[in-house]
Structures are given as C-alpha cells and as structure tokens.
Amino acid sequence: MLSLAIPSKGRLKDNCHAWFAARGVTMEQTAGARGYRASVVGFPDIEVMLLSAGEIAASLLAGDIHLGITGEDLLREEAPELEGRMHLIQPLGFGFADVVVAVSNYWIDVTSMADLDDVSAAYAATHRRRLRVATKYAQLTRQFFAQARISDYRIVPSAGATEGAPAAGTAEVIVDITTTGATLRDNGLKVLEDGVILKSQAQLAASLTAEWDAGARAACAALLAQLGADYAALAAQLPA
Amino acid sequence: MTMTAFPYYEDGALEALNAQATVLLNLFAGHGYGRAEPAVLQPASIFLDRSGEEIRRRTFTLTDPSGRELALRPDLTIPICRQAVMDGASFPARISYNGLVFRHQPGEPHRPTQFFQAGVELLGLEDRARGDSEILTIAIAALRAAGLMDFSLRIGDLALFNALVDALDLPAGWRGRLKRHFWRPGYVESLLYWLGHGDGATRLPKSRAEIESLLDAQGDAPPAGRSRQDIISRALERAAEAASLKLDTRVADAIAQMLDISGPADIALAKIMALLQTAGINLDPQLAALEARLKTLAGLGIAPSQVQFTAHFGRNMEYYTGFVFEFWARDKEGAVQIAGGGRYDNMMEMLGAKRPVSAIGCAIRTERVLAARLQTEKAGAV
Image 1 (cartoon, rainbow over the protein chains, first blue to last red):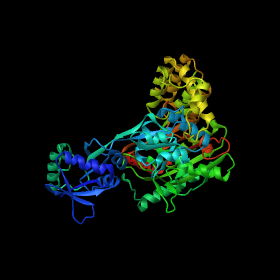
Image 2: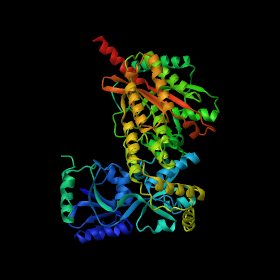
Image 3: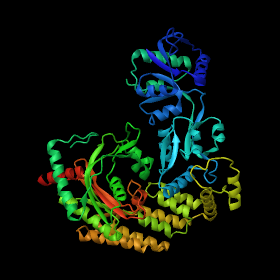
Image 4: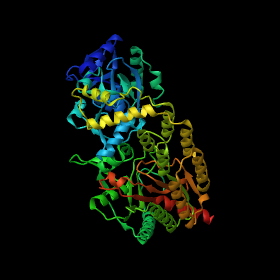
C-alpha cells in the first residue's frame, strides 16, 4: 500500500482536488470513515488520508506516510535539513505564500536586514535585553538570521495573529507568512527588502524515512506517471 | 575513552579525572580562587539574553511543567558571573570551578554532548595587564600540574582590531559594524569591500525635516520598542554615513592585510608594527599589552617563537572583548584544543552590573588533558 496525505480543509484542499482532477485522477470518500479517508479511483493500492497541513509535514518527517501535499513553508520549518528525510517531487502552482521578515512602518530607517542588524545591536546595548521576533517559524527564522549575521534577538513563539505582536507590545519584529501583504499593511508593517525567507507554495513531497516496500514503490511510480511527475529522481534516493 | 555522543564514565576513568580535578582545584586555591558550583539547570534566558538565539544551536533547552524555559548549562562562566552580579560580590573576585557542561554539536553527532570543564574567572581587577598575566600563569601552571608538558599556544587580541577601527576616519555606525562582526570569518572582509565601494544607503531621507515628516506620515504604525528620537538619530546618522562613505581603499587593504597576519608571535608583532607604520596608524598601547603578555610567557619558559599569534583570532564565541588564547595538544586522534579563554569585559554589565566590571577567564577541557597526557606517556614509553 502507498499512503498519500492531502489537506483536509480549506482552499488548499479544493486546489488539491482540482490539481488531481486536471490530471485525470479522482478521489472518492471511503464510506464510514467520517471524511478522514479516501481512495483514488483506479488505484486500489493507494490509501488517501485527509490531514491538516501541519500534520502532513510532521507525518512525512516521521515516515508515517509515503507521499503528502502541503506547504513548503511547513515542510522546511519541520525539517530544516530536508536531505535524506524528504524529497520535494513537484511544486503544484497553488498555495503561494512568502515567509518574510517584517517591521513597523514607523521604523523609517530600517529597510534591510543590515539595518535590522544595527538596530538589534543598539537595542540590546540600550535595553539590556534582546529584540523580540514573534513567529511560528522558529527554525526558518534562526537559519535566515544566522545567514544575515544577526544574533542580537530572541524568538517569541507565536500561535496565531503574529502580525499583531508589534502593536500589542509582545515583540518588536515578526516573521510571518504573507500572500498579498494586505494583512501586514493593515497592521502598519512592512517587509524588509532582503527579508523574504522563503517563496513558498504547495508541494507534492515524499518521505525518505517511510517504509518503501515493492508495493508502495510500484503504486507510487504508477501514480506519478499518471500525474506527469518525476518518479526516477525519488527512486534514486530510496534505499535499494 | 572513545568518542561518543553519550559518554559513559567507567570507574577507573572517573577516578583519574577526579584526581586530576583535585590537583587543578588545589592549584587554583593556591592562587586565591575559591570554588563555586552553579546549578546544572539554569534559566535559559541568561544564556539567550547574553549570547542571542545563535547559542540555541549549541544548547539543550527544555520547558519545565510550569512553562518556564530552562537550559542545561553550556558553560559555567555565565552562571558564575550572573551569581557575582546578584550577590553584589566585592571585586576583584577570584572564582574557580570544575563541572560538567552540555553542548549540542551541530553537524558533529559523534562529539560528546557533555564534558568536564575546570576553570577560573577573575572579575573586577582593573589592572588588565596584571589580569592577563595572572590568568595565563594559572592556565600554564594548571596544565603542567596535570602532567601535561607538551602543548602549543595560540593567541589573539580583539582589542587590537577595535583600536585599529577606532583609529580610522570612519562614521560611528561603520565602526560598530566592523567591531560587532570581527569574530565572523569572511564577513569583515565583505564589510570592508562595501566600505570601499559605497553601501547603497542613498535613498534615505537626508534632512531632519524630511525624516520628521516621513515619521508623521506613518499614521498609527506601532513604535515597536523604539522612540521617535531613537529613529530620528539613527536615520540622521545613516544619512551622514552615506554621504561621508568610501573608506580609502589603501586603509581597507591595510585592515585586510592585518587580519591575514598569522605566525610565530615575535614575527607577527614585527609585521603588524611595519604595517601600522606604513598606514600611519598608532596602536602603541595595544602593542605594548601584547608585548607584555609575550614577556609573561617567556618568564614561564614559553618563547615568543613558540606562541602562534593570529590577528583574526576572536574565538568562535561572541562574548570575548580583548585578549584571547587557546592551548592545543595531541591525543590519539590528532590535535585537540585542551584549554581556552580570554577577556570578556562587557559581560558583567550585560548581566546587570551597575558599572563596568573587567573580566577574564580560562576553561580547561580536563578529559582531553588527561587523554593527551596518557598519549604522551605512551609515546614516551615506546
């Protein structure tokens, strides 16, 4: 059996079904499974699970499922080093969103990460505590700030409504996801010029830590052929 | 002892380590250092506030059942300094320690996640030259007392670079940037490049009136922890910087050349002096301090030619502010760092001290010292 997880709700779910349908693949709800299981018409060896986007990233990393569709932002946050753990088979052309570093419009002197470096160092020196960065992308933030040579900051985990943190006084800077930038603008925030951490979209991804028996490989090859996606690059990374 | 992420101390190995620790602690006590033992589990904030998020990569953090974030101590220096601040210790304070520290080793899963460190901290001795000399003397005496006679020494001095930057005709912001990033290999060189070629800050508002009206136009954007005055001052500073930029490329080259100097200390010192003379920069006090350290070492039987001086050596941890050093020896796997330390003169203030308190310390990797000693003994027996 090949297990495939797709988003269980929202626009990501609708886009996902449309993407499959456009490639001649239809899903059918499994009777009595309360909407958490489905099957693929014509592919009896594939079991489809409907999970939240975050669970899909975690399940791929844990090797609980073979294939999954979820946002690249979630995949990279879950597993900062994808190599040997996950393989991104194909970007799907929907679910576009950027993970960005944003600061208040009031900070007219800050437009780049280098400015943020100056300001964070000055802040640490005068306040004797570090600038706080609110985010749910702690891993991505740490990586990106390290590349930008910024170390004078603290991450404040944020569960939701990250864009409100600077106004609420719980953080000075945020790292968040944005599609049109409207939410950031509404909150008086701007994206730094070189502050785009990741241009994310939905990805069809494979777990490299799952158990890939012959049946799963065959079903995967058949499904990817039908979808017009590349199986060879994935097969090359699976244990012989 | 084999290299493993999770060391297992057998009876004999532990006895030998404890015996060595007793020798070291007695030696420290003989120099007036009293032993302290901070808790293994510390509030994570004391390390994060001091060293920033970067330290998370090397530190084991956990959340206690009440939601407080804790850390397994990655060193004993910060907890000891913090205690001295909280106790309102009288200075100079001389403190020694011996205990386990815990480090995640990113990308090197075979390295131990915990190891012993024995060391000393000398806090609040205003005569820095005396402090440098005292710590070097103790470090060398400690290695010898532990039975290790064959080791090499590598030294550097961040103060030399800072003084060089201060001697240049540069805007304050650029001085801060160069000093702040000195310890990052490669990055200073790219900063120097920007300095020579303009930094692209040309689109900033130039006059105070322009800045004020831009600020007024921001509606109800949150101040996010910065005052209007703070922002105005920095915007003005940046505008001035952008206007006055373009460091003389000959000076930028001189800095880059100095950062490249590395070799036996006597030769390195001569090279630096020649370079500074050509560039017309006077760093006599810093060079005198370097010479004084070499004299201390010579008095301890270590000739300047045996000391490696590396100008860009700032240690891979950002809290050092001046003199830095590393001792190296060989175990059966090759060259290993067995001790290291240096000056961290602004740590006490960062931890809450009301006035500046000078600080210098040294930490010895006792397990490596033991392994290196056994290796020498084995080599000697052959």
